[in-house]
Image (cartoon, rainbow, N blue to C red; front, top):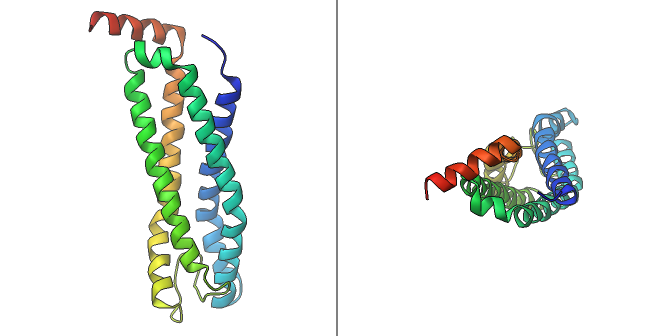
Amino acid sequence: MARNTLSRSLHDVGLSAWFGGTLANAVALNPAAAEAGGSRAAGAVANTGWNRWTPVNAAGIALHVAGSVGQLAGNQGRVANQQGVASMVLAKTALTAAALGATAYSRVLGKRVDRETAVPAESGTRPAAATPPDVAKAQRQLTALQWAVPALTGALVVVSSFAGEQQRASEVQKGLLGRLTHS
């Protein structure tokens, strides 16, 4: 097997940024915004933090996708010939699509919340009494999505670990033999 160090690195670094950044923002930024000193400040802090994170997150996602494509190209023989690899690729692709969809929808909702820099809020995802209704609705949806994205990207980390295990020599042999005996 050829080495795929560049594509594996892009895949892993991008996924690390995507997972870690969204998890950190859900755990730290959104609740910390409540400590900003008033509902207008809470909204401004959360919006500023997420707006600063967005380009880094987009770059991480782009790296991950580029690395994933490179990994798929570099392992197409294993995908075709090693039992279990194609189904892992399908699972990973479905998780990636779900994570991309959840991330994109989160950004749409985030832009709705960010219409005003200092929209009143109790925290990054909890509306205040004075929060406009459409913004409050978006914040309530973001409450769930702030955990969905790290859950989906965390599942990608797990599937990626499984994919790495499938590349062990013993697993490749077992998968090739399994493919031959089931043909």
